[in-house]
Image 1 (cartoon, one colour):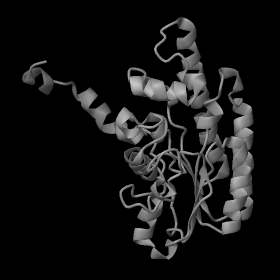
Image 2 (spheres, rainbow, N blue to C red):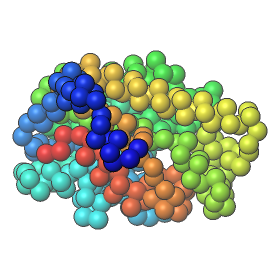
Image 3 (tube, helix red, strand yellow):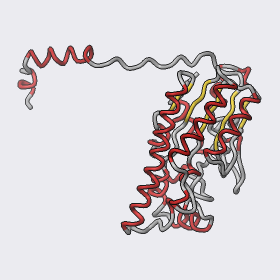
Image 4 (spheres, one colour):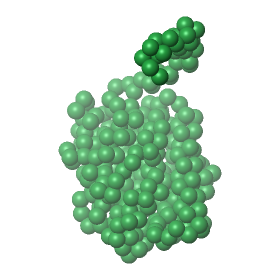
Length: 280
């Protein structure tokens, strides 16, 4: 369209455009995060433990995106400590490598005993990453496990803020690693996430369909996290799939297993999840 024709937009159209903001529903105001907490805990699995982020097949809690104290990662804990020094040394990593959603109730109990004011939860990768597709945690069971943990937190820490972080897109893990011989070797040698990563170069319809079903299971888990957080109330914040949607790269994965975030990956995870949360 020429500049002249653009100037000839009918007055009625201009009027409608001018009124459009008033016709649209107002965006909900961000929840008041309250004062920054003086103690925090992280619940989850090996991702939250910083597994393989600093050494060969070991937990590296100092580089955890949530409660780590390594300045290179700039975790939630370090960001909060910058505005509330009282939290120093009260960063509890209650996650456990290999944990599934069923373990969240126990971890929640530990956090309650620690009397924290902020809890992050990232769980679900191991519920979907199983030896076979049939072994994945059913969606209803996953939701029940999350609700049990949240109920324990709410009863024991009624004023604490809780951030539920979306499960990463493990289908993208396959996508960014399938063409890497090193990644394929690691996946096979260590038996990593066969439900998604078995036969990584196969284009057979059965394998394509399997990968899509596993991805859908993760999507369903995240949908349940969103609903569970909404039911919890204003003290809970879901990241609106920010972590799930982040387009992570192969360079952000451990070069030992091509599954866990390396130090750079933990840094990205900290950036993305904190920006989608309470942001003290």
